[in-house]
Image (cartoon, rainbow, N blue to C red; front, side):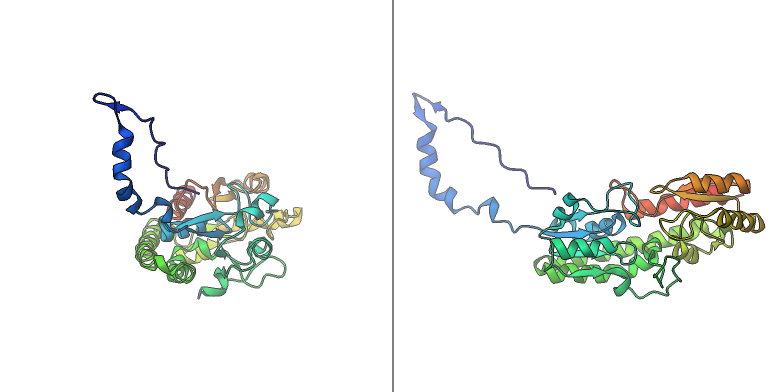
Length: 307
């Protein structure tokens, strides 16, 4: 959390002229100094607890300096296998608002209930209007990885703005202005990705796990098979053999592993199918904006699948 820098500590009093102390001048100015507003009178920023990095990036771009955004999932971790530590639960305590995706991050709901029971919880897949893709995980009817379609995130921004305004109405003007800027940026991002991936429309696309159907649908990729049958479950030898057969029939040029998961299953499939291997990242890192993350993924797909 960023904090305001504190004024420098006062320097020792010195004398001037023939021993006349500075203290006399300070006493004379005391009434005027007391009339100045205290720096500590600034209102404290709200805390917004967010489950995964893509949404944390969006919220930071809307909130600016008006909120402390706590990002719960550590860099390099997968939301599907994440087991929160006590320190991560403590970090959510006192949050004014909790934002989670739903489906991939059920742990965030448990953290919020324990650490910030009074905070409203914003669940993206319950608030966002979208055409769902069938999920593959047990008990999940809808694939929840909607954040990998920037056009859906542009539609989400006004709702995130409203959620922030509800808990911090004093900064509504800033939230609305920043939200409008962000929505325009995401529409521009969507157009850029569409243009860069247009030559690959219809190309066979083989991601590691079922995180990419909204991305594939948006940009016209043909998602042949996911290498992991369900999040957190290693593929069986039979599943691998069937995946290799599908890849060969499709003419896919590459398969993709993921930054947060073991690359070994994808390596085995790539070697067996005789195709290339590249790495996608559905989550990103703390030093990346959402826009930078999506541009990097699109560049990886373009490089791997271009003949």
